[in-house]
Image (tube, rainbow, N blue to C red; front, side, top):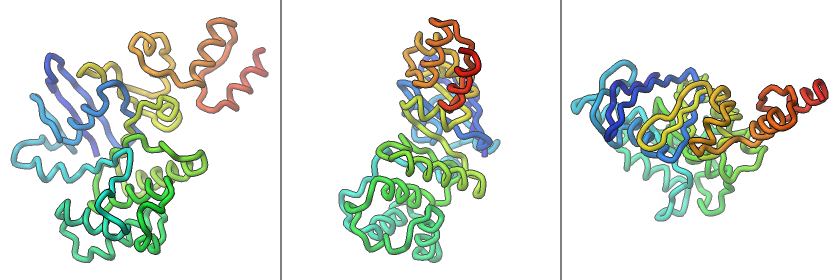
Length: 262
């Protein structure tokens, strides 16, 4: 799966971008949600968009939009009491052509490791982790190729954060899905993504390898992008104390460097 923006005009800016499911992709920056609307074909400016090398046109727009599933920051269930009511509604709302809806619901729950008993539970009784897994199960009902998750680990403790990450890795690898994290949490993006896109003022400030981008601390400060705490620590140690440290994602690796060089 690949998405490409080619000579795509957003107001006065020309944007070129290519992303594929080879990476865990992170999107951040002040206008990150606008970029998501563009990538998921919710808003269209001038220029060319290709999805799997097929140019998006008026004739195929509705079909290609089905490739995308966007998971919002919070589970929305205002008019529903039970889990099964919400899942059945999502099938109707998206007009999904499913031969056996009940089986599809059970299969989606199984993929995210939720027991079928959850269908009879009241949504308001679910934990934050269960709600996040339910959102993922709902997104899988449409069998999307691209799953876009807003603030994926918000409200989760470290145990459930790692559990969700392992599940997303499995979905990405086993089912060949593109996974995109949208967040202002630079620490999370630094830890879990390997391609980063910073979108601000209707243009791509930078895109590339996540670790390489976050090591450009002065550039990020200039553009008012949040610096991951572990990067900030290393940056200050190198700059103020002239300590020879490498940038790492794990604090244990920094401690090893400190013992080695200090």
